[in-house]
Length: 185
Image (tube, rainbow, N blue to C red):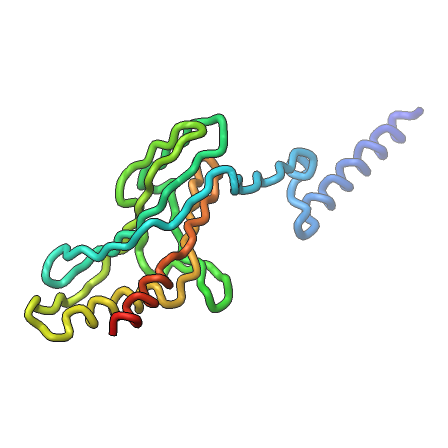
């Protein structure tokens, strides 16, 4: 093979690589050859059950809605959750199943869940709320309406632990609260 033929083959290969790298979605050849699949979210190995909801007065203008869950670790690994940048909690809307971040939701406290054990988890939603005076005849109705407005379109909460790539569904149970408040009216 002549030197001219070798140069032509090498040049053609270089041109082909250049064309591949410029194609939309093509990226570089290195990216094409070493494309990593994004890991899937690990779900279903830890289950959660709704326990209770509680509304606490932070001050005269703010409240904290705390929703508690019982967690069951069905794995052979310990699991730790700490509130911070690696933990995201979203609302899944009843209306269309989409996720929402309209309200700031955070872990109420760190959670350690040993392998094959149970633990409690609580999430907290802090919102402005002008607390009625205790002698106010509509005290309970105002509190119930506030909670109802916060949870009315929420089907469940979903916790994402970005560090460990875990997804944990936190089911609703607050329909019971609405049924109880309507029955007591």
